[in-house]
Length: 312
Image (cartoon, helix red, strand yellow):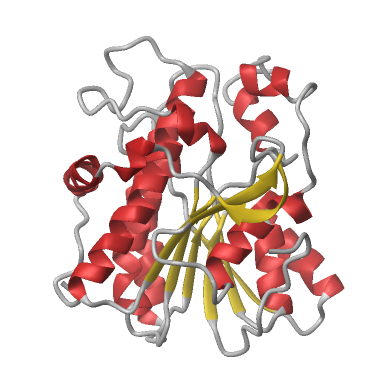
């Protein structure tokens, strides 16, 4: 796997990328569009999405890009967005679950009352993925690629307190839990596809230590100035890479013919922080099939979204 991954021809493929207005999401949208895909930039703030679209078009005038609104911290918004995609009546070849928030300093909640990181990073993408399954399974070789994080390695799923209502809220441990949940979802979806005979490839990726606005935006949520967190402090010491490199594991997971069901990809050098894409080690907590199933069932209960009857 090389440093500069070349996205295979995507002509005729239809793609949704969440959080496509900045960082790895914008870079993924750009490179998928450059390779010929029709890309929906799924963003919370439409004006920022339009700005990203204009920037991509300035580099690739023939790019096929559309901006649509989705707020993953609001299940009604997720439903409306998915209904819009399904109403198009066209197959969806690829869903990239990229959007997320990182380490807000105080416990905040989503529109549905979930802890913000668990809600935005995991439960919103879970509901979106399930709602889009009919469009995905109508495609010849559909994929769902979900962005996890190296922080998943220190994550633990607290089934008795997923929303940090009883424990003292920890920005970093909460982020780690949500990203472990993403990895578990990717693996459980791969298992479900195999079980039910769906021609769907579910993969996961992490960006290593990539410089994006995620670190600063999260730390500043609800504050006048960003709080110094473990992640922002470590940023001065650790090897890091730019967005172009950091997006490659996700692009590999989303488009490479070599990517495998339930596969997990990340940078291959210096503790998985930087470097060309390699297969990443899956933490044993995400290898626990019973825990993966339990989380899936609990997520269906919390979101009120299950595998649609039409595809079940």
